Length: 367
Image 1 (cartoon, helix red, strand yellow):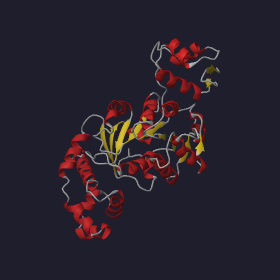
Image 2 (cartoon, one colour; image 1 turned 180 degrees about the horizontal axis):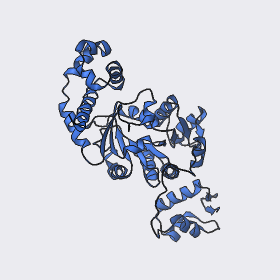
Image 3 (cartoon, helix red, strand yellow; image 1 turned 90 degrees about the horizontal axis):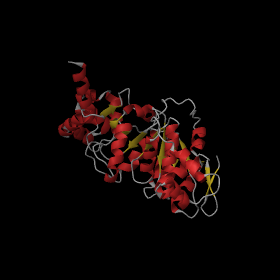
Image 4 (tube, helix red, strand yellow; image 1 turned 45 degrees about the vertical axis):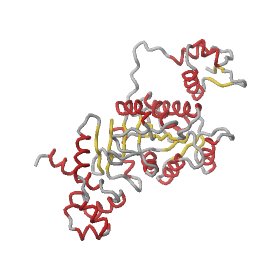
């Protein structure tokens, strides 16, 4: 039997083990601990399997029809950009192996190498404010540019902004989703998903075809935190799923960071609660890097290649601001930028300490 054929048979056994409803990662790991690799599980006698997971689940494991799903998964994995990683693969993310509840199998669209690079998670509200989205994009870009991979959940709001910002840096981004890897949820993120596949990675532990379901997302959140050295919460209401991710990060021994906001904003309440409970209050990406003891001056990844003769939009905007206070409408007219584009660029400059806002909303250049 060729190595390729042997590897395909082994993958089929992994897919069979992870495709039976009602037998989740915990039971799967119990079977692996008892018998070894999946092919040994299926070679064991019913009674031996029942001793580990009980008679009812043993019946389901051995009798459930999985052939169609397995063939579909193998066909999916044969397509460009698609990969299936198991616990026995060297490329499986090592950081997840250090958690209490790693998945036994991951579907990956994009670059699987990103899963073993140093990462930071950025999460927050789906109904983010304009300022929250701008903060997420700016922080993600700065952290990615420092060489960290940015992990988030590809939801609307903060997640999507974090992925967009990270794609602009050299660290790129990983999206952990709560559906099958062959689905895009929400559908409005289809263009973003395509960019992530081309320049980052989308991963899921759920079988192909799995639809969006509320109970999938808390399970998804443990992977977001598990892949990362820390979790930064940007905007979150009390009861937000982002607070679940933060709690899981603490349980996994990861750092938790939060950006404070207005005491009058419901989307600041979750962040303020985290800070009261010991999360690190951060005002800039540098605060995060220092807390992680990350040396951005000697990143593990090569610098971004600059486009020849590309205009430096930041320098141009600073020149247009000048050294006298200016209001945003005047600056927008000078720069020929939309309000959204200008807002995003100014947020980056504020985070970098190069511009400050004065009373009345006017802007002052500092450098």
